[in-house]
Amino acid sequence: MKRIYMDHSATTPVAPEVLAAMLPYFGEKFGNASSLHRSGREAKEALEDSREKVAALLGARAEEIIFTSGGTESDNLALKGIARKNRKLGKHIITTQIEHPAILETCRALEKEGFEVTYLPVTGEGLVELSTLEASIRPDTILISVMHANNEVGTIQPLEEIGRLAAERDIYLHSDAVQSVGKIPVNVDDLGVDLLSLSAHKLYGPKGVGALYIRKGTKLESIIQGGGHERRLRSGTENISGIVGLARAAELAERDMPREAERLAGLRDRLAELVLGKVKDAWINGTMKKRLPGNLNFGFKYVEGESLLLFLDSKGICVSTGSACSSHKLEPSHVLMSLGLKAEECHGSLRITLGMSNTLDEVEYVAESIVEAVERFRGISALGR
Ligand SMILES: *Cc1c(COP(=O)(O)O)cnc(C)c1O
Image (cartoon, rainbow, N blue to C red; front, side, top):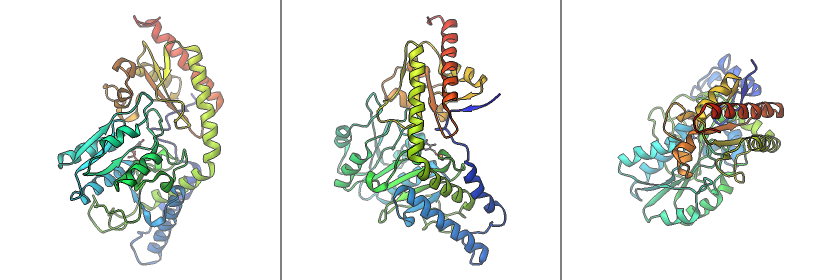
């Protein structure tokens, strides 16, 4: 059976060009970037060349990029690193209720260290309100962390405005941009961020590698001690093959983004139209206005998202309910709950995230399959009609 992959917010396949760029670093170019000999210099050159390429995608300077093991580590380094370094200036951190667990759980850990965290609510569309954010700022606020685009509902936050607010008050601004980098323009100066997390496997790069942008002059503590790699901020022999893969993925994203974003938005809108035109008591979670090009999150009354997912899986279609991270749990998605949905409405949610390989034919097939699945499960449910 042909597999139709529509779960690109969970992870993406490694692009063939990315794999090709990485392969030599598993073979003859195996050097350690810290070694002084020819092999080491070759690795060091690849490392610094990659740093330039990743920086270019963000409008940053190469020396502002630190390579990490992925989005989770970047988020941990940003939050713990800033909080611990700036403890004397204040103990208050502001974030949102709809962040990825990499942020939320890090904040909970920081609370145990004595920091105080405000978890901002969002509107029904999933947007942070500037007035609410402004009202939550205290004299001892040291850090604001707001994700750029949400992994479940694709909502894009007004980071530029938040950036201005944070800058006026001299508060560090971090953004988890794992879902937006490579999909929509992300320029660190336009957004006004001091720190920004990204992950290779969400933009057709390999798993287990990412980066943290750190604006020049920003002081933070390392969370991993060792040989002092990456400007003493992230010790450990650099994952050169992974970093080269991330850099190639960044180049491809820059090249393809405008065209691909428009194509995906077209497919997304078509899928929404096809499904909502045929299924009653169905809606889109989040907003269609400020949304990632490839993201759709349906809500269906009287059906379980899990049942839909398994039915679609039997037809070779890969999608998700809520988010991949919480799909093994039975609790409703914290993101959808924050958007104001009732628990039973969350359970009927289906996230579809389109990417490079998806075509209009696939969208039409998936739409038909969703309609078929909803009708079938409503037919056998007592509440369904
Ligand atoms: C995937 C994801 C992460 C975690 O990135 P990893 O590289 O998988 O650790 C963090 N934040 C968001 C928004 C994500 O989508």
